[in-house]
Length: 438
Image (cartoon, rainbow, N blue to C red):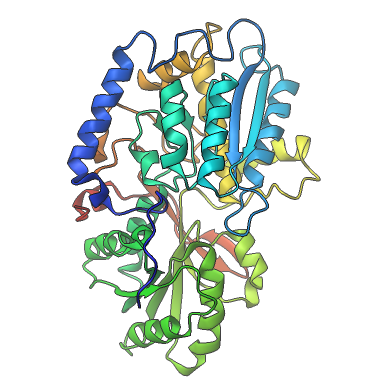
């Protein structure tokens, strides 16, 4: 099947865009070194960004809302609730936190406008945000020296830009981790993914995990990412996954917002084939999608799902839930099980620790960047491993110099709820290093 090839920088564009991953890492590391050496801090005179003196510390959070594609209204809504909560408890180092929000509309022009507004408003950082249009917003942020802390991990640039401080491993870690876990649990594996530039690296990443577990590669079923039905892909994936009667196979749809459409076709078709399990990654499916698709009676029951964080019922989320209870109890945009809300909580946790590390000194984009670049170790109460961003981290050699959290969790849907399939995190650093991403 031939689909439309797209050029925007979204879920894992082709790494060949950089000619070679190593060159990308070198360029990124060089840019970081340049930023560190400039007294003005990448185009910003220290002290000019919002946060100087005793006034409020101003940040921004953006995400798409009320669009026909991906929507993440819980992220800016939670950011506002977090600011109210922090301010009700004395602020950060005694300073009020002011959160500006922006709707990027799933549009490259609007994403750039959000970034330019952040520069104009002299924000200290963009925190806990989602946008598929990194190529549009990063130039403005980099020109203004504004750090991007805890983006959702939806674009490749979030793991290469010198001003990006990601808190999760994005799609690379999820797919590599899922493959690693499925290797011992599944017979034949079928991957259904977009026939687009964005989808071209998905088989490589999933197969790197399968290969680590000495499992054969998944079959690669291409699909248009704007189709209204996936009957052909459902049939082909079921045929492949069901070809070994001795071990139940697995079907892995990785179609983002179109996963629901695929699962409708899959549900209609699966009765004609041997029993198989389904598996996917956070971002294609979360608790809100499971609920909307029928919960325990829906197509995701017993599915494996790789995620970045512990399941929402884990007690490590209790403080985040307290923020919601105190400041946004009736706001139905904010779901504590939503990965966007969870990422925003962790991003603001990292930002707060960066500001607190300044010990009451000047708070600016430059000083926050310096704190993060100088080896500050951010702790998140066990929701992630300790986070520390270096000029060029372990995965620079494969084109991910800013990817510092290589841990994933494996979850399973039981009685309609996401539950931990096993305790603790799985580190996929070696799996990613061994992947052929050139």
